[in-house]
Image (cartoon, rainbow, N blue to C red; front, side, top):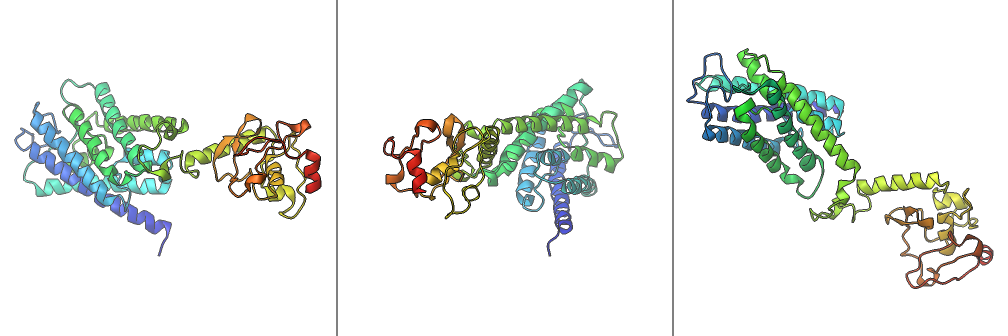
Length: 384
């Protein structure tokens, strides 16, 4: 049985379980780190009552970073292992997941946070001491942008290591966990290091304790998510894959070696638009010529030049097709970047240039041996 409803349900259940496990161990580690804090009975934050203690900050950061790394690695095959509404928003905005899946995952993440908070409160003998609030001396604006920039680091890491497929995608959870770890090192003391609306709302619901600045743990991650999405889309538009190719040693995801890479597909689309703007017909050769055994008379384009498909077919007896795009891109006729056909099937004695006096710019065919005139246009028409 396979259906969208069933798949969304399974993903939501996996996301709930993963978020519960991630936050349970993260909250439990925070409880241990804050065991000696002077927390009031109504619960407190991860920083307000502990003072400055590097050991506590490091312990909490390690608990969150390693818990995220392990549980993302475990659950990414089920739901993607997002565990964070900000990450869900980023993947939806970049087209990795759909709207219904996003809604299901969001609900599961909130439910998982509540479940984890309730379990830690019920199991551990100490007061639940995991809420996030601003430390003394940290303004709302400062806390907002601390959360925003830390979330931007985490979300961009996820987009580049998990959404972008490469040879090291399978170890993306390591980089994601380390990204949260370094963010927690910076943020725990000042804001509690949320980076995750679900992480902040669960303890507040379980303890029924709300702070006036709780909203920054929703708006801050949303702003950071927008930063990460904007920069990610910016470098995608600029085809960052072409700037430093081959770094992963993965030919399949290297646009300089894989003609079917998404970057090459976009280049093909752009070339088609350029040729269309020049009124060069790019329809398949068989349609232009009426079939393999039909008329091979050169087709004249609206701009006065012979069409590249029919010219190549005419010179190679119908065996080559410049319109075939499998071999990628290169300089085409008139210097316009265009598609190159696979010339490997053309005998070497047919790979010659064929300039005609009236259409010299359009009647050249690349030759691996030398460039020399072979036939006039009239000879070609008679032979066809």
